[in-house]
Length: 165
Image (cartoon, rainbow, N blue to C red; front, side):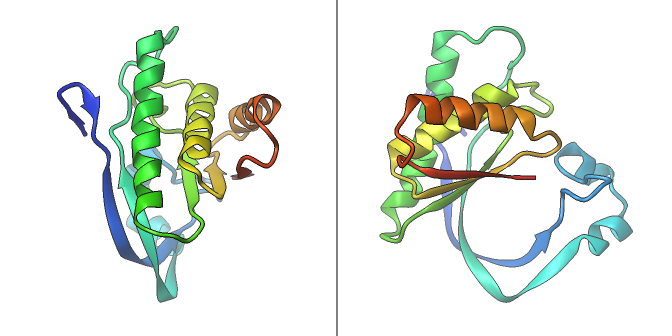
């Protein structure tokens, strides 16, 4: 969400995840494809988690109007939103945080895949995340590019990150 033109991410704590959905296997049901998938396909891709797994879920409004060249203010807003969300997860738990990120704002809003992953990696580093899993569906190359740029600019041990597709 946004309040007074400032990002206001919401953290939902200790939600019990009761299932896992495979959004990767072809045909992908990731993002907008999920709402078009048949209920039979969604059921077939759903795996019950037993026992349920507690998770902290952060909700961040996707940055709109991602086409074209990003202005400095847009980049700062995106970085601030991600940092606020990721930092909140660190405040509620002393355990090392594993963040799962993806192509936030790159679906209907048309954001830049590389930039969005790179900004989330930087925010995760600043927030002190121990590990980041990048969900790079439907295409992994932009995430790999962002990861390479991130590691070229920051110490290799700053955050452990891996691309999952």
